[in-house]
Image 1: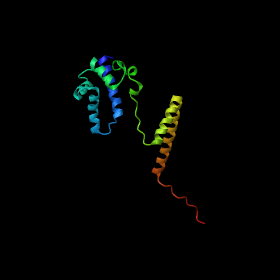
Image 2: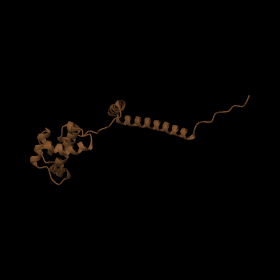
Image 3: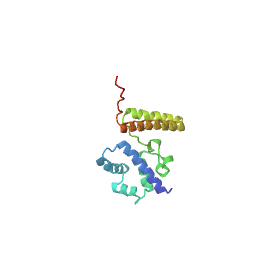
Image 4: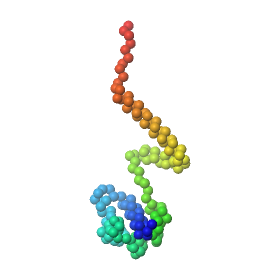
Length: 155
């Protein structure tokens, strides 16, 4: 991968880390996120926009400036992201949970998955199939309507 692409990829990782810390909550703040990051690394917002779009490249001087401003090790912007960035800078998948119980269930599944990935996937599929069959059965029962009362012969 060309050095210019590696530098851009790492600068975007740093921007994403900045964004997570900054926690843009709405469109107004999201627009000013890029401006704030540009100011953090010491460049004009339009210059940062041109870098992101590929119209400009991150040179040696700017690479060192970004590292200094973002407090990452010297030379890290020039190396492949997996080797370069500290673990706290690596992107993490974000899972939105509706409540504490859902978050706890996801954490439990993660523990199980890390113990035995294949067993965790198999068990999850079994549970899902069972739940889908239950839903299917209740949906069929609902479309049939209420059961007619059983009449017994008159005495």
